[in-house]
Length: 188
Image 1 (cartoon, rainbow, N blue to C red):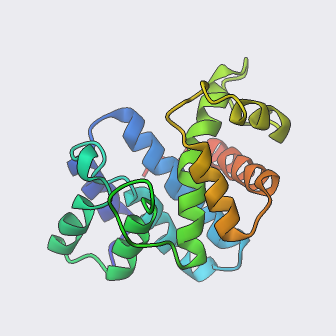
Image 2 (cartoon, rainbow, N blue to C red):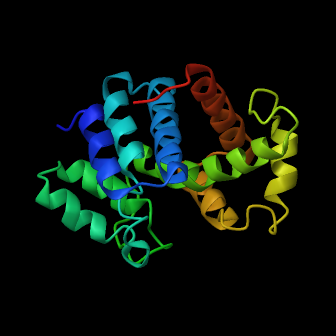
C-alpha cells in the first residue's frame, strides 16, 4: 500500500501547477472526512490517497485523463483498488469505462467537481472562505451555469443520484468537510 507521503511525491512528479496540487489535497481531505463520517475509519487513509491521486494524469495528459493514469500506476505497482477508484471518477466524463461501484468511488465522483465549485464560490465571498458559506448560496451559484463553468453540474447531480443522496445533503456535507480542511491548513 502506498503511503500518503509517497502519493504526494508521485502527484508532484506529474503535477506542477499550484492549483492542481491544492485541488488534489482538498479532495484527499474531503475523502478522508467522508470515510470517517460514514463509518469507514479504518479505510480513511486509503480514501484520502485515492482523492489525492485522482487527477494524477490530468495536468500532463488532459486528453487521456483517467486512462493514462492506469498505465502510470500499474508501472509503479499501485494496488488495483486504487487504480479502479481513480479511473471510475471519470466515468461518462472521459474515455474511462470503469463505473463507480463502491460508496467511496461514488463519493469521489460526486465531490471532485463539487469541491471545485465550492472553492470558486468561496473565492467570491468577502471572507474568501467556506467558513461562512451556506447551502443556499452554493445552490444559487450551482444554478448559474456561467459561474465556474468548468465544474460539471451534471456530474455533481449524477454523483448525488448514485449515492441516493439529496443534492442539499451532498452540498452541506462537502461544505462541512471543506471547513474542516480549511481549519487544518493541511500540507502533506
